[in-house]
Amino acid sequence: MHKSGRLRIFVFAAALVVAVFGVHFLYGWYGSGPLVKEATLSVPDGATLASVAEKLEAQGIVASASTFRLRARLLGGNEPLKAGEYYIPAHASGSSVLAILQGEGGEVRRMVTIPEGMPAIMVQERLAAVSLLTGPVPTLAEGSVLPDTYAFQRGESRTALVTRMQQAMARTLDKLWADRAPDTVARSKEEAVILASIVEKETGKPSERPMVAGLYSNRLRQGMMLQADPTIIYPITHGKPLGRRIRQSEIQAVNSYNTYTMVGLPAAPITNPGKDSIAAVLHPARTNALYMVADGKGGHVFAATLQEHNANVARWFALRRARGEL
Image (cartoon, rainbow, N blue to C red):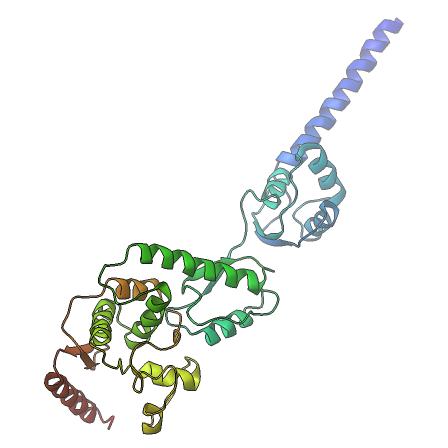
């Protein structure tokens, strides 16, 4: 065989080997991976490709850490890994795994819910109990966070989450304040939150909020005491349930919250009001009501005169006696 013929055979064989290797190399990157069942992977801040590749191999997500690193460097682009917690689907290819870890989807979103009317002290307790968050819980001003459901990542700091909650309240309040009714009694956003916190605690019935806001707006305009029971309780429990009846001495207590012994609004909110309670204060129902009492069905009966109110109170006490509550 001539030398030129042998050279052609050698070149062809070498090209074939390279082609086979290339196909294998690419298939190993874009083809199905070894993971049998969906898994989650946590990538801490500052994690290197090498350390993450070792975790991937240990969890059976890739067959070889070293091969994954090589393919990632040659084929995966220059995007850095993003810290977080990720869902890795079964049989994910090396290419798709890297894309997920670079922030192109699959991030696990944890949730924490702050209900409407949850006071600051209980928000702090709830966040402290979420083990996937890190760091201390900052001290919260009452009425500073917006009740809602918030997504967070494993390892996110409690301070960062609280900041997002407070930013959500600020944005919501700015928007509602800009659209407020011209006759609202709230002279500032701060006053709107204070009155909304009372509305939030006074009724658990969403449809009643504008009516309750209208009632308290009327009392403020007329210089009447608000006489809202939750303002008696707040200095005692900081917003937690009292768990018993209010005592006469507590009704008569003089402090910056008790609206049975002061005219006007309390010094500060008594809870974290929800968006709808703030909206109710800024768009209260047009009503003559000055009084209300429970109706025994989860709502209230409203009255414009003391005589009418006393009759409603008598009916409420009669209902409670019939239930064996008195």
